[in-house]
Amino acid sequence: MPTSELDHVTRMVVPFDAGPFHTSGQGFDYFHGPVRQLDTVQIDTAHGGELIDSPATLERYGLLLDRMSAAALDPAKSRDLIAHLTKDL
Image (cartoon, rainbow, N blue to C red; front, side):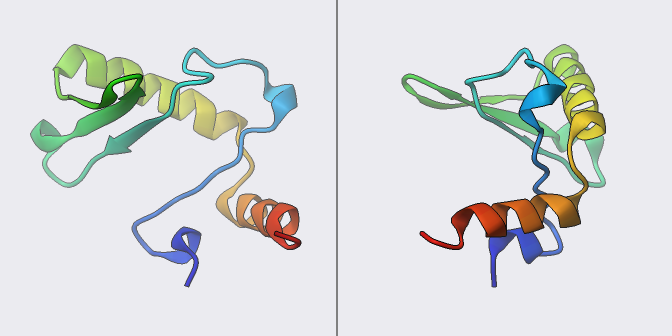
């Protein structure tokens, strides 16, 4: 089963015409659950992953994630596009 079909994973493609985002070129993962105090962001750096849990930084990444989600294709269209682009690989 592809990762994008797991219940706890959402993949959304941001089209190029949506414009640049602050983290363009730097990946991040936002891990959240029912207890907000346990939320964590992991950013990719030249020296490996860095975990961030400060409330102010989580707020900034949460706003960025909201902005990216609003500009992205919905999960089904994103999954279809990824499948289309990778079908010949």
